[in-house]
Image 1 (cartoon, rainbow, N blue to C red):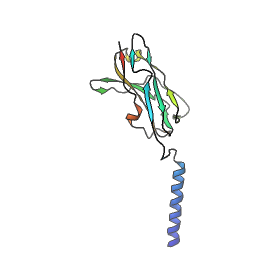
Image 2 (image 1 turned 30 degrees about the vertical axis):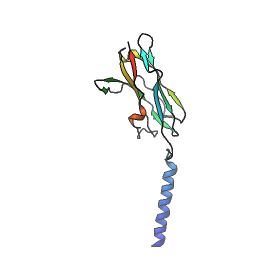
Image 3 (image 1 turned 45 degrees about the vertical axis):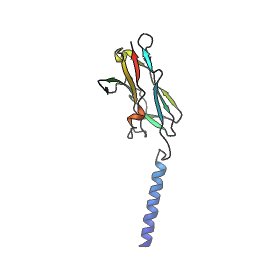
Image 4 (image 1 turned 60 degrees about the vertical axis):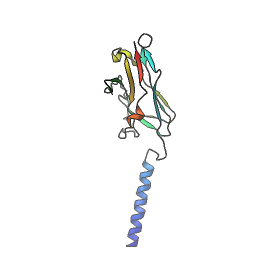
Length: 151
């Protein structure tokens, strides 16, 4: 009985070791993202587009889906509108990584896409901890500071 208990203990230890080695995220890693635009205020008279920028300041790799990974939202009637992406990317995998210390400059959003409508907007990225997109990060980590579009 004692040998059987020892074998079960060794077996469990091996399974735990295998699981730890196959984990793609470090329990000691950090996720620290900055989502911003190239300007805080835009003018329809002088500007044509806003550029979303994502910086990975953390120590962990994050993943963006190989589809519509960034969208714009307008603040209306006290709430943010549904996300509206303006382009999609295509590739051979489900997602692409953003490594620690890397910066992603997404395709600029033309103001014609939002009907040249003045208002307050923000960008929201779709970002996950895993390459399959099963562990989507909290919205607070994925949104830009609001920016204004003026006449």
